[in-house]
Structures are given as structure tokens and as C-alpha cells.
Image (cartoon, rainbow, N blue to C red; front, side):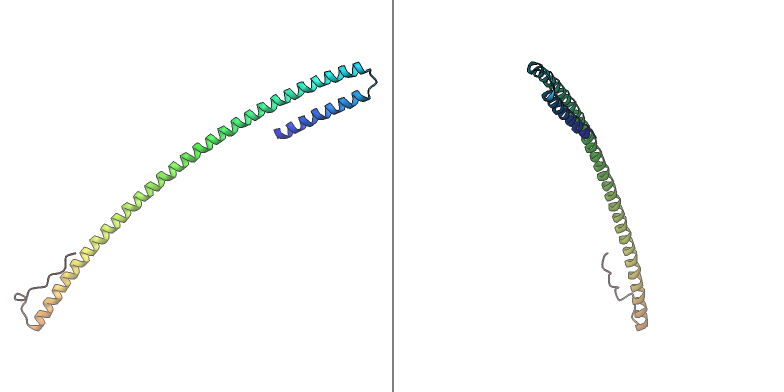
Length: 148
């Protein structure tokens, strides 16, 4: 929006200068009066251009300051968000690690219990086979089960 204002002001100044120059050239005045009028209009044009330059410089400085502030705020927000995401990922990894450790412990416990049950069942079945074949269990050693 301010860019349109600046364009309008520049156009207005140029148009005014051209209009004034044409009016002076076609006006019924003496050469001295025309030169004096041209000097005055030139000074006015110079003052207007200087004012316009000051306004544009001020607006540019203001916009640059706003861009700097916005960029700083955005960078701070992104940094904060990245830190939050990193913390959440760390927490999630920790929970998953704990869950996996608990699962491994549960599987190990269940496997040990199942191995013990199988070993006892194997001994019972061996004893039944020995009794059925007439061999005494006291004289035959029971094979040892592999350690879990």
C-alpha cells in the first residue's frame, strides 16, 4: 500500500513540474520574470523531492525494523518448537526403551517357567516309560536338562 502512495507522490511531483514548466513557457511574461519563476519552481521542486526522500527513507527504516523484529520472533519460535519436539522425542524413546525392557523380562520369565514345566513333564513321562518297561528309576540317572 505504501509503495502505491510513493508511486503516486512521485507521479504527482513529476506531473506538477512538467505542468509548471509548460505554463511558464506559454505564459505572457518577460524573460527575467520567467527565469525568476523557474528558479522558484525549481526550489519548490527540490524541497518537495527532499521531503519525499525523507518520507521514503523513514518508511524504509520502519519496514526494515518490522522485518527484523518479525524474523527474530520467528527464529525464537522455531527454536522453542524444535526444543519441545526434541524433548518429546527423547521422552518417547525412553518410554519405548522401558516397554521393550519390560517385554524382554516378561518373555524371559515366561520362557523359564515353560522350560521348567517341560522339564518336569519330561521327567514324569520318562518315569512312566521306565515303569512300563520295568526299569527302576533309582538305578537309572535322569538326564539333566540344559540350563536356560
